[in-house]
Image 1 (cartoon, protein in one colour):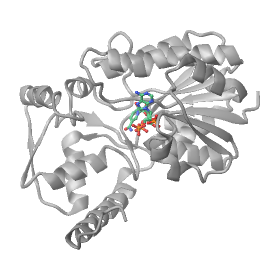
Image 2 (cartoon, helix red, strand yellow; image 1 turned 45 degrees about the horizontal axis):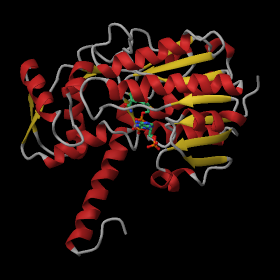
Image 3 (cartoon, rainbow, N blue to C red; image 1 turned 90 degrees about the horizontal axis):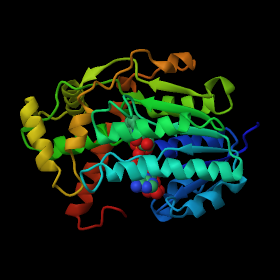
Length: 323
Ligand SMILES: NC(=O)c1ccc[n+]([C@@H]2O[C@H](COP(=O)([O-])OP(=O)(O)OC[C@H]3O[C@@H](n4cnc5c(N)ncnc54)[C@H](OP(=O)(O)O)[C@@H]3O)[C@@H](O)[C@H]2O)c1
């Protein structure tokens, strides 16, 4: 079936905005469902043939109504932390939403589904609630014989608005002289957001991708300590990174579980137990050349540095930073 119109869940986030841009440029009609339309309005509404709709996507009826004129659904909804600690928040956002999405697809005869998962997603053996719930979502999607499902499992994703390098950049700037780093030996193969979006685009209309999952990685793997040191070097700031032992990393996570916004949590700690690297990088299978982070990250981190300086200047001159 020729896909013309796509319903995008989680389309307002970091990956979603890049993907929406790429799909829109490729000529697809898009319906982006969001819980808070206003917060991403300015980045999305100018895209041609894109409807940004505020709705509660956890309502079965809403999903059924919105899927009615769509040929495919792309689900990018994901959380890294839940408000509680027993996994119900992950289950709700990752598994129950997918169950509702499947029902809504059946109701409207939508068969093509692209699902954003994560490297090491595993319903039975995932070490964290995050990875188990992502794995469970994959499992129920692949078990549905009426759907044409492709799942994407990236390592950490980088790009101008990422929450990895930008977050470490902010934390490094906020921490004077020494920076205690949990899980310093955890390994990642950061993958460029544009490569991830290309993987979705290339698979969308390709029947060979039905029933498959794709592990997406950058060209090289690094320890977390190397990545944080690299972030500091891009910002040209000197910080002594203090690698925490495993027990101190766990302790830091259990303390941060109670900090508002959970900058690091026990569940995040558990996710790092398995390295987020690809045994075989499926970007190559899709004919995509993995972009090196060294070619991209310094550009946006230096812009962040300029923005911070500008905001400081505005603050000193008593002007609001958003004007
Ligand atoms: N970024 C990475 O490094 C990375 C790595 C591996 C996998 N992933 C996966 O890639 C996907 C996109 O990641 P991202 O970095 O773009 O995330 P993001 O910027 O946080 O965006 C997530 C999107 O999901 C929606 N959302 C969040 N919580 C929700 C909830 N409880 N119920 C319903 N909708 C909710 C939000 O939409 P509204 O607020 O507009 O409703 C938002 O647009 C996620 O599934 C994530 O697990 C990301």
